[in-house]
Amino acid sequence: MNEPIIDSATTKAASTESPSTLATAVYERLRRDILGGVLRPGQKLQVEFVRDRYRVGNSPVREALSRLSSDGLVERREQRGFYVAPISADDLRELIKTRCWVEAIALRESIAARTSEWEEGLVLALHRLSRVPRSLNSESYATNPEWERLHRAFHIALIRNCGSRWLLAFCEGMIDQAYRHRQLAVAKIYPERNEAGEHRAIVQAAIEGDADAAVRELEAHYQRTAKIILECMDSAAPPQTLPRRGRAARKQPARLRGA
Amino acid sequence: MNEPIIDSATTKAASTESPSTLATAVYERLRRDILGGVLRPGQKLQVEFVRDRYRVGNSPVREALSRLSSDGLVERREQRGFYVAPISADDLRELIKTRCWVEAIALRESIAARTSEWEEGLVLALHRLSRVPRSLNSESYATNPEWERLHRAFHIALIRNCGSRWLLAFCEGMIDQAYRHRQLAVAKIYPERNEAGEHRAIVQAAIEGDADAAVRELEAHYQRTAKIILECMDSAAPPQTLPRRGRAARKQPARLRGA
DNA sequence: AAGAGAAATAATATCGACAAAAATGCCGAT
DNA sequence: ATCGGCATTTTTGTCGATATTATTTCTCTT
Image (tube, rainbow over all chains, first blue to last red):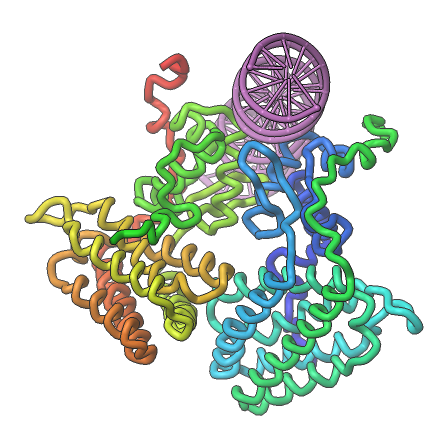
C-alpha cells in the first residue's frame, strides 16, 4: 500500500543525521536558535560568544555565520561583526505580501501539473500534521516542535510540485522567516483559531484541481496569521536593536574547553 | 536638471570601491570569474587552487566559497570540496520559466505602484544601455562588460519598484544565473537580434501603465534569449563535469607573495 | 567644561600549522 | 587476471595565534 512516497526532510530543515562537519553543525544549531527566537533579533553575535556557546573553534563559527547571512537570518556588517537579522512589522507585511504573490504561483503550478503521487504526499502531510497537538500544553500555549516541523513540511508539500527548484528554495526561505516572526509573537496565536480547518480547505481545493479556491484559502491563511502577529507586535513594546554590549552572557564558566 | 536619481549599484553587483575585507574581495572576484565563464561549470575549486589564484590565505577562500554556495553559484559537497555549479539545458529552461513567473509579478507591481521617480530611473537606465555597443568588436562578437553591467541594471530598474526586497533579491540572483548561461553560450547571440527594440518596447508599455503588454514583451524577451542559448547548447557538445584533476593550473610561479 | 586628538582596549579578519577524512595506489588472495 | 582490503598521499576541515581595524577612554587644548 504505502510506497515510500516522501523523503521527509527537504533541503536543510530536519536533517536528523549528525552532520559530518562542525561548520554545518554550528550552522544548524545557530539556525534553530535564531528561528526559535532564543537569539533575539538585533542581538550581536560575537565570534567568541558563539564559540563558547557551541564549543567549537573560530573557523566553523565564521563559516556558519557566513552561510546564515546569505540566508537572511544574520546580518553581516563588514568589519564590525554579525547580528541576528532584525525584524519589524514592516518586514512582516512585506514578507507576507511576497509569500502570497509567489506561493500563489507555486501552488497554481503544482495543481496544474498534479499527479497522484503529489496528491498522496499532500494528503499524507496533512494527516500527519493533524495527528499532533498544536501546543505541548493544553492550557496555556507552548510551542510544539513536532507540530512546527510538520507544518513546515505541509506547506512545502503544497508547492513541491511546482516544477522549479529555484522557486521552491525561495519559498522555503520565506517560510523560515515567517516561522521566526511567529515564534517571536507567540502566546496569542494558539487558542482562538481553527488552523486544521484552514489547512484542510486548502488541500481539498487543491485536490479538486480548483486552483483559484486553493490560492484564495492559502492567502487567507497567511493573512490571518499575519494579522494576529501584527496585533501582538503592537501590544508588546519592540524589544529590538539593543546595542547589547553584552558582558553578561560571558559570565559563564567560559573556557572549560575540556568537557 | 539631473538630480542623483539612481545610486548606480544594487546590492552586490558593481561595487567599485575596493572591499575592506579580503574574504569579500575573493568572493567578488570568484563571482565575476564564475559568471563570466572563466571558471567552467563542474570544475573543482580546490582551496589551494583558489588560494594561489588570488594570493590569499585559507580562511578568506573558504568563506568566499561558502557565500557563493549560498548564492547557488558554487556547489558544496560536504567533506569533498567545492565545485562550480553545473548547468544544463534543463536548468536553463527551469530558470527562464521561473523568471517569467516571478518577474511578471514584480513588473506588474512596479507598474501598479509607479511614481515619476521610478519612471525616470527606468528611462535613464534604458538610455544608458542604448549608448553603449553590444559588442566590443563590430565584426565578430566580443562581450562588452559595460553593456552587460548596464543591461543588468536595466532589468533591475524595471522591477525595482515592486515593493519587496525579498522578491528583488531573488530576481537578482536569477538574473545572475541567466547571465552565466548567456556567457557560456556566447557567439551566436549578438548579430541577428534587435535587443534595443525589445527593451524599448518593455519600457514604453511600462510607462504607459499597460502591465499586460509590458509583461508580454518581457517574457518574449526572455524566451527569445533562451531559444538562442538552447540552440547553441545543442550544437556544442556539453564540455561539462570534467573531473579535471588539474595539475596544470598550478604551474604558475606560485607563492611569490611579496608583489 | 567641551571638543578634538591620541593611546589603550576590544573585536574582527587572516594566517600557517595540524588533524581528520577521502582518494589513490599497492599488494596479495582467490 | 580481478577483486577486496591495507598503506600512502592528497585534500578538506579545524585550531590557536597574530595582524588589522574599530571602539572606547583618556588627555590636552581652547
